[in-house]
Image (cartoon, rainbow, N blue to C red; front, side, top):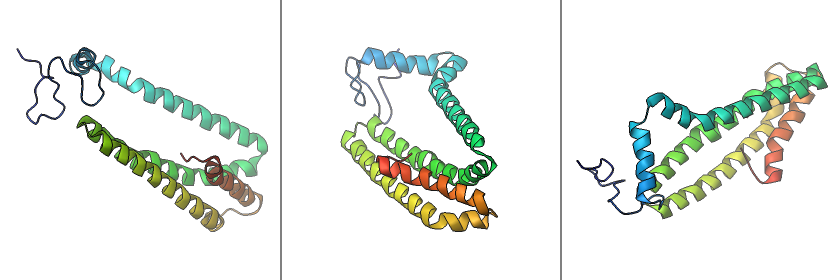
Length: 182
């Protein structure tokens, strides 16, 4: 019986016996064992193993959000209201970058690497970096210029508006001053 990993109808991703994986350069034994474990292992254990890193990241993010809200709550009701007003804008930025753009870029890079096109994967990574910087600049400009109008249109005024603008300016300016963007 031939190994399902050794042949493929399209030839993409096929690994000849005794050769290294074209995408990773790993020995065929290690790659074949991982593939066999993924394809033929117990379903629940495989799903839990694959989900563990994402679960840890989500728990860390939830803890950070909780602690930030707790700290801002200690500053007062106006500060908490200001942070609550900025939260949807921050989430929009994060979901567009991580969910929309990040998911598409990850998929394109994975397909390029899976097909053994390393130069294309590197070009895609560079383009993703440039796109992230451009999107970060666009979001920052929109938040700094349009923030007062947006938060006022949401009905906030007085100290809560001042707190929202302060929080918004820190959230959207700080990554640029540090040289990175979420």
